Image: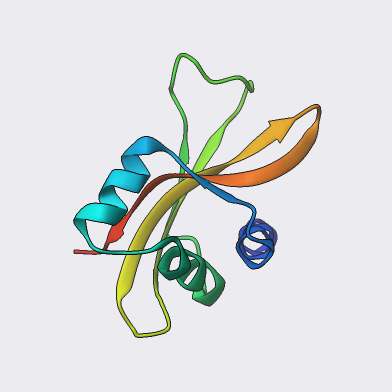
Length: 102
């Protein structure tokens, strides 16, 4: 629950960044960054936690968090993201994927 609270705090503060892939998914599904913020704030649980196996990862252990949650109109949205750490401080939540849940 602590991780979900941190994700929600990032969403409330607007400390969200989107990869190019996530931005393209938003466009394809006609979603806005506000839809994503609403979905993250409404989330009740993290659906899945994945350990990243990307060779370019900067941290020794990096986790991706999958959340499926509705925005304020009830549309289910799938997001996958991770925390970005700069100089030892978590700065924002990076969305790797953000699209309408199927």
